[in-house]
Length: 491
Image (cartoon, rainbow, N blue to C red; front, top):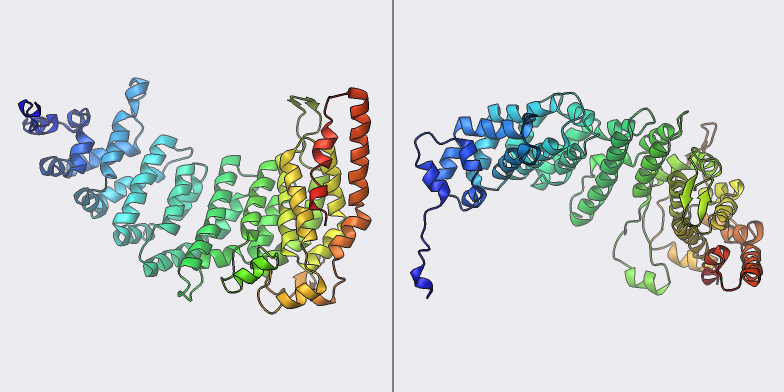
């Protein structure tokens, strides 16, 4: 029954191409043009690769369409043009990547004042990204000749598509030798330091957020590449720059600038958390680590810890006095003083630092009495599960600090933190921290139970819950929601 149908019909695209003066717009009106292109319809590809058609396609994805067009079709042609230019057909990629005049036409999109049209920016980023993957050497050479390229990308960092383009340069270049060459080029352009400069209260929130996300991704990409290519002896220059003490200190100076803003504090803390994010140092002794309860034996750069340590007092002050926020209406009433994202990220950072079990940092946190402050917040914001989780992590990290005999056994194999060679105090003087073995054992544990009175506070909260339930019957008390979380962590 199927043979009565003629399955060899000629497509509308072929019929249009037979016309003498067919236009690109007429072809783009056809629904199957992309399918025909991917099927490598030679007649269609020859038409699209004409100089005039290629220029028109590039103009469609880089120039704002007329405002008088109907909204639903205004970006129809730019979208189709982008799909055609990035459909992974070698003939189109070769034509676009091998013609410097077309690349210049594409590049000119960056040379305008922000903000960029976000949709066109996504088309531009996708097209350049595809060329970086397909015509790597030609496109990299072209971009390196453009002195303003990095400056223009950073100028438009408020547009997320440009952040994506930067990350494509970091992650999508192959082979490894060429990738390392690109990383060195970006490092010579001081891309890390310039991204850190964007995390500043004077910048708008979008630029700060995208710069922070780019730095976090550079950390993770660098570490992933390093673990996959262990035979490569050369370090990732971008990761090395970002992990340097100078870079960490500059980031913190920007965060705690005179006019502190929540967006800057949050964006900067996210970068610090990425730098403190644990990464496995190796697989040797992995089974033994798990059997001893040391589930996370990782290395953290001492330079990062050196950079953060002098600013612990500022984070403590942030937990005390965050940027002012307006009262908010919640399901349990009006919250006059919201916890805020800045304080939540401060708690996250404390949990990450406590997990490193760095002696000098532990001493400073004990001196500042930061854990007591975190417990104050824990019981004050009884419905904030995000905060509760971070305080639980802090307590779990403290309780997991190894006993003397366990530490002696572990010191010969893996360590949580690289050896610290000295840190700067508040006066800029270099101080050498004490080795782990010379510190009072379980200092943070003693501080938690004696100074912070953890057990007493839990019992007081429990009694307050019983008292409230006595007066309100079956109504549950918010205090119990917080207090019930902590006892399970006690030994």
